[in-house]
Amino acid sequence: MAYPDKGEIMMEESLDMPLAEILPIIQNRMLSQMTYFGVKAVKSPLDFWIYREIIFEQKPDIIIEIGNFRGGSILALAHICDNIGHGKII
Image (tube, rainbow, N blue to C red):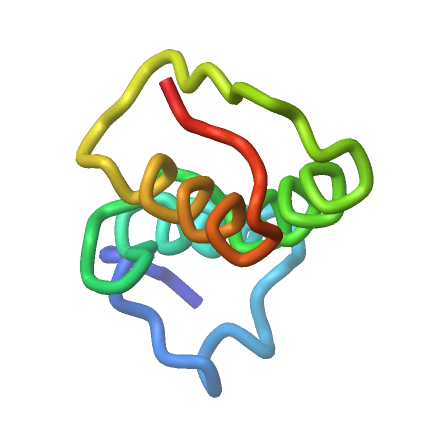
């Protein structure tokens, strides 16, 4: 079966695809379509979850974000700091 435009494959069609073909599609969708409160964020949801746990446990005074794309990651990190009542984002 040919998949001319792998970016537009429906879930049902992907069930017959080899894992090596479907993983890049999933990664592309995650990175190209991920938003946080409507702001583009080039991070996977699992990364955000792990960041939240680390920040909660370590309670850093400052988090330095390097490589801002549209601001979604900074917004997410700021929300985490607000929720735990500690930390600032630079």
